[in-house]
Length: 438
Image 1 (spheres, helix red, strand yellow):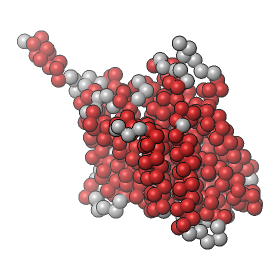
Image 2 (cartoon, rainbow, N blue to C red):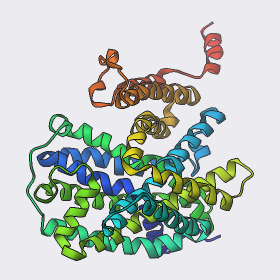
Image 3 (cartoon, helix red, strand yellow):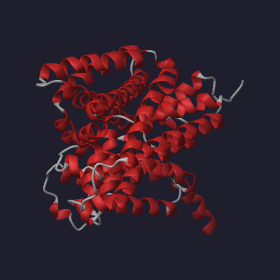
Image 4 (cartoon, one colour):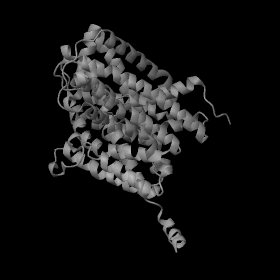
């Protein structure tokens, strides 16, 4: 069987993955981070790129290296634990946070500005229409690569290129001094802000979706699948880095027109209107709607595909269930949804990072099963402390932990546990060693 793809299909695959990633969080968080970072834009942007581009890319590579599925990635964990972790991630990137956020951001930035007095009824109606369209595309799962990779994403990318060129050619202000945590430790703050994109969670699931798309293109061999999966990830990473760098610079030069804005959506809207005049909002609406819609399609499809594999409910029925749930949750409101998601991200992101790290060192570990269980347990325990802190719980008694003050108290304990696992051998080797010693 032919295990090769045409160059156009490879590019379409990369664009499809890029479109899945580029959604609500990717658009609204970088401008605000750039404005707050000000003159410290470089270290802040580097930290952000590590978690928002580097980690998703590495995660896709980890999926390719491990065998191309969640089951391969978590084969050293107890099956129930691996399933529970997957279910939690799918709930987060699906109906609980990420997917509804795409609809909310699309409404706030692309539709609401056209109403003199927007009401809750407008949001409710838009949510139904938005997620109905997303469900329609997700319904025809086998055609995702063609519809998104070859139609929607090129249109989205053209709009982003126009915006980026305008931002660098005609910045709307000068950079100010760094503010808040970006003044004292911009690199670490940028790293943590990258959590908000949820792209590492997304890549754990989007990678599997790309593998499925490859199979529908006739690519079934492990080496070929891994090669094309990594190629798609690299294309998506380049696209994401391009978007983030331009949006960071946009935020950093927005002081004259959006000083004191409380979210990146406002900064982006004002900046685009300043650049393009009365047509600015129309340009932004097209970009935001396409970005949010493609991500919503990918999230609904990935979640439906996974939950249909766990239950007797079909893929298409899950598309309806998840789409309806997203439309309902979207009416909570953007600021409330973001506030609720932050502690959850602080709790689970370190676990996902640890899982990816273990994938690359697995073959060097004497006892992979023990290593996976201990390292992920340690990362979860210390991540819960960081999550409790951002949720407002008083955990000051644990402030002696290294990097606790910047929300990364999980890092050193996790790395130390991972290092110890290189020196712990298999339990079944002990009797033979004792016998030889005797």
